[in-house]
Length: 170
Image (tube, rainbow, N blue to C red; front, top):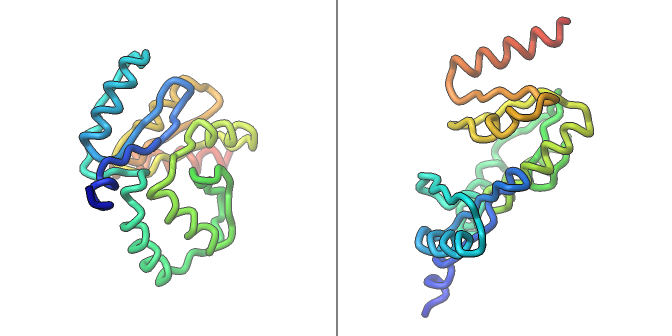
């Protein structure tokens, strides 16, 4: 077996969303086999997330190198509101550190549960999920201490920013 064949069999811990929701990612057949083993070991539910990429897995490292080249061309200014990266579970103001976290985010585990705990500790109660889905927003619905908005379409995006601005003016 060639080393490229071995890489294709990778399964990575993609995201820790809550104490009872873990996401794995990697080679499709390897993820399927790992899912079956998880079921045998007591996992209650196994869901297939229909994506064409092995997000947050080691298989994304080659693509992260392309992102690194692109980010060298971009200026990132210090954020005016805290932006918590999900790799280190902390806010960064330094452009180089922000870019580094963005690159590592492509192939590293999303530490979502820790991010939520960090938000609660810092008393930052408004969260925006920027992306095509509402998975993380839905996870927060049970927690009355966090206001979560999905910005998965223009209507939700505008609604989220309207509510955030309203909260500032009160």
